[in-house]
Image 1: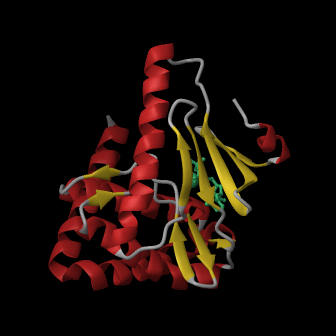
Image 2: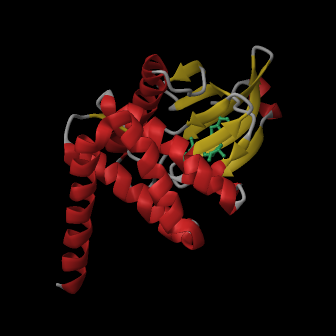
Image 3: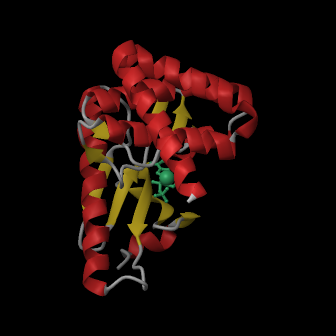
Length: 214
Ligand SMILES: Nc1ncnc2c1ncn2[C@@H]1O[C@H](COP(=O)(O)OP(=O)(O)O)[C@@H](O)[C@H]1O
Ligand SMILES: [Mg+2]
């Protein structure tokens, strides 16, 4: 159910998983993220998944702040309705930035991802649409698929996804952006662990190719 006030809201994005609205919360510009019911899922399971992701996202957005990275403030969470109000982050989505800037910013993305991994958190959906560049620096969004983990394989899955996104959404700069990302990542995690994670990325890539052949 929407509050009467929500009638003033403006749809920003209709996603596969959630709808995003621009609205206001106690006088602040706010993003309302609502996880929609999926008709193809059994009702009880669907509710469980949406509730879990909403709670997990709100928790992780707040917890990861203590690592020293910037995420939006969580204003309010309604777990029953699977919706939450977040601080509206004013800035430019990295996905939409000029390619030269994306290459540069990938180093900062690498640092943020390095900080998450160093603290045992995998993001789960690393795309250039989940980073906003503001006057104060880079902000990371969208923790609905994040997880606490200390497995190198999980960190490699994060990196592999990001590399794939660069490959598909920013193909002309994939090599430079990937190198820039790794430079930032290595600054945080050091050479030893970074090499371990990159090796695992190669293993995953090989696995993928093999799976394609069969
Ligand atoms: N707090 C926010 N401030 C500004 N824009 C946001 C915020 N949260 C989400 N958005 C915008 O909405 C888009 C989708 O939000 P996101 O949380 O990534 O949901 P999805 O799970 O659908 O990817 C983002 O790429 C961004 O453009
Ligand atoms: Mg997203």
